[in-house]
Length: 152
Image (cartoon, rainbow, N blue to C red; front, side):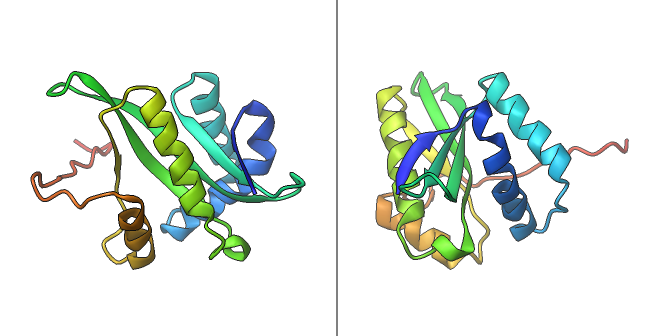
């Protein structure tokens, strides 16, 4: 397995797995919109996407997508590990571990103060993976979400 940074040339390979990731979390597939979303992120350099590919480059095994943010208190960059997914037939091959380790190296190389990740409260596999790599559950801050809808 190799970990590479995605470019626009990888969109056709990445989109089907991104769609499966969205479906895993209960979203409708929308393959065309998903591809357009990824293309915008890459064109505008709004995210960094890493791909885990088989040694012969024939298969995409998984991906992760990170978004930049900043910490006003530490006056440094923060990376948000927003999306990570491993193809079903590539699980238990340390794909997620390798993707996260690559993301961690990128965070260090960009002088980030930390990486943040969230997962559903019942996704114990992901939680154990994050903890095994060194992520700590945030006990200092409680996170809230404010949904923004089209309705007033």
